Image (cartoon, rainbow, N blue to C red; front, side):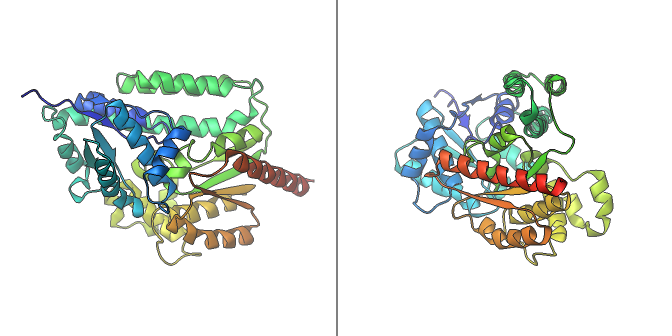
Length: 382
């Protein structure tokens, strides 16, 4: 009996399919089917086969899974989350199998995959000939891809609105992504990253000494996927704002806070230091947000509160809170954001997303918000 050929796919989430594809190809030596770019059809498919009142990320993932299965994928990867999304892998699997699709679900939320060794061992069910050493060798380049994507996108959001020749930043950014998809290893990744940053720095800009600064906070999936949030960061940047967003895979999963932050917060550190880095940062966030909250409300809510206060203290001109409709942890964070807004006199734009959200409506609200904070800054500086 011939060996089954596995074709893996992970739902669209920004550009993180690039490092996932690298690991599958080089760590497992399996075929990876990159999910099609999200379109209106993706969202409509996801909404059609999902429970009505489930969150938008569930529907987006469902649409991505269906399109991946249509293209021939037979292993779907689900990473879940720390909210209800942690239960969605089983629900996605059941719905899709009820629809008649033949596939296997690699659900990383299951207990046996809770650490790196467990994950690597679990992958051997699809790549029995791959060794743990082989997988481990692919991890440095994979992790580095994630961090350089986040660093390049940080630079892009904070500077692209001030380019003199329109489209200059997009050109460099798109070339960076295209080259990263072809990277063969860690040295390639580092070279491509350095070139992209150098090219960004070389772009002529007309950036004021004190530009409008906007901090974006909110729900994990929607905030990181441009299609899901209607590209609000790019739209704000193009209006002339320096846009900051801490929430990404590097900060929330791979990296600890910088050494300066750790030194200042020395008294807050616990045994979490020896756990996964994200556990450390969550512990610190609880301490930072204790002025406003006594309990962890789940998922990204503590991050939202801590970062909102951080941006307010730094003198940012406005905050944008992004969440999917019905996201309970972020709903709980909203009253706290009201208090932060009042205490620090910082405007907050609240954006709720579902599969019926209008791009025109979002753009109109962003324009009004930008005009308001721009006039406010002008008055305070005069």
